[in-house]
Amino acid sequence: MIVVATDDFEVYHGVVTELRDRGVDFTTIEPDGEWPDEAAVAVVAAGERVEIPDGVDLVQADPERPRRAVEAAIDALRGETGRTVVGIDPGERPGVAVLHGETVVAAFQVPAAEAADLVAREVEDAPDPLVRIGDGARLVGSRVIDDIEDVPVELVDETGTTPYLGSGARGMGDVLAATNIARREGEEITSRDIEPTAGELTRIKDRSREESETNRAIDADLARRVAAGELTIEEALAEHGGEPSETRPGPARGGDAEGDSGPDPTDR
Image (cartoon, rainbow, N blue to C red; front, side, top):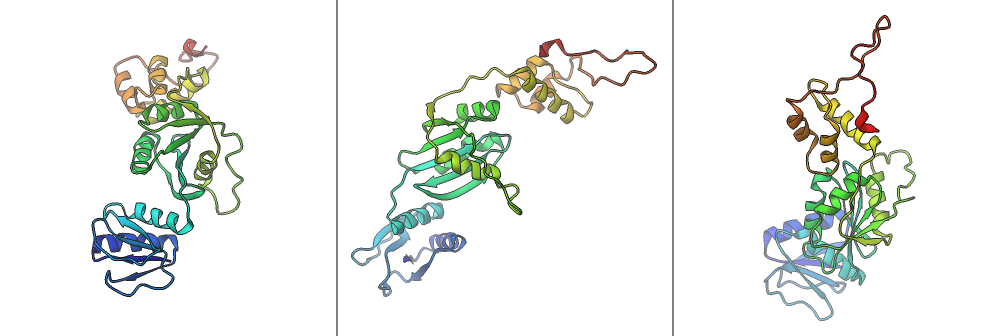
């Protein structure tokens, strides 16, 4: 059993809340109170002097990081010393799963621009962490890889990582895929240079038209910069503001094709 024994209210509140949220059996005592016979792990505040019984593992909790303390206590309870692995299912809102050994300890879905910062926070105190990212969504995935610093990254074949989602499970696919990616070995990689295809550039230009207040689409050069992560769609639209726009072809009227500029030669 996990025993929380601390006079630090902030640590007490944070750790107890985390334990309750995870449905973990625990008890609390005063630091000088009587220890239950089934005590296996003690959680106390960092720097706090508490005498614990022989054979009880000690976890010291930072008041600003109660989740870390709870993860360490659960690992100690289970006898696990597994590596921290972060799995990422890339996309505009990547699924992210954090595993300690075989246990999923956290899951997220965030905008792609926030993924690297999330990884940095999740592995900050972890010894020898690893990131595994799926090889799909090439453009977004390459930007995420480039943004991750000081953590080894493996590129994983994500074929078959997204499970069948039954009734009531909609929206969970990306996170479940990230969990499967975290458990699959990949090839170590430091960057991923991607030349966007014509179709990918067209989709970026279509998105820019949808987000434009005047139905404007950015040109191919700006679309390539968006694909490379140099610009956001909003920044590209602002830069494109004073330039001639590509307009959506209109229906022909009476055989007059005026206004229909035809295919964009930059997409060839």
